[in-house]
Image 1 (cartoon, rainbow, N blue to C red):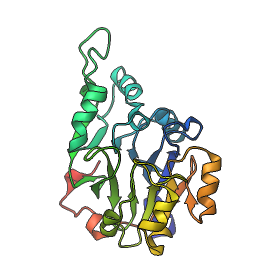
Image 2 (cartoon, rainbow, N blue to C red):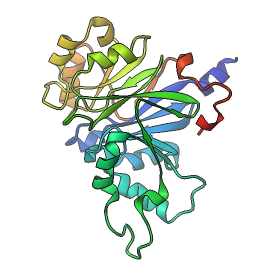
Image 3 (cartoon, rainbow, N blue to C red):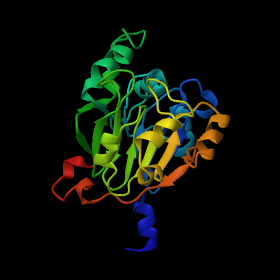
Image 4 (cartoon, helix red, strand yellow):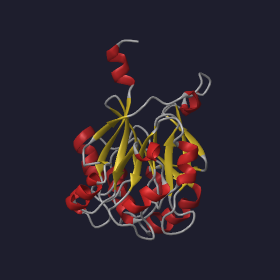
Length: 266
């Protein structure tokens, strides 16, 4: 395979926003898995994420994974609905939602009566909802899903692609899940701020919970402002910034669709 073909097929993760809930200037924490320049999967759609997405890709996302239902991660779903509801779409965007999160998303977003004043439209008319448990296929890749430690049990989840990356979503430290999903050199995108709290990781947590080999692969996001980012960098960590693109290792064979899995292609 030529170098140009390698570049076209290479996976990377682009951050649209990296901020915590109060960090509007940094954008709501959201990222896009892309193959070459092609967007494959949006991770979360907090307020402002769709505009940032369209600024980069010039279109709406073909698919998204929802980590949890705090509004800094799903706040743009109303905007997304209206942009889809009145324009013919070649295909419904696929929403991969952890099964325990589906009722939460239903109550938080989809239960709103009469999404259009004229009636006749349901929220789910414009999306393809795909509830997921431990894994799902998309774009020829097998993604793993695991529970995070955020706010309440079974309310938040992370995403992993074997051999390539782990994206924790909002969480306290999760060494047991990194032991399972970050054993083969995966890049690890981890929630972290300078100080910990009951729902989020802090610098002291990283030093206590993770060994040096894991800490060396961390890219930190979900922080409040530039002074917070500076503190994270002073700790020796890579810190994500809005618009940053991180090349990813190629997924291993366990994460690749076999030739008979035609249904898994986007």
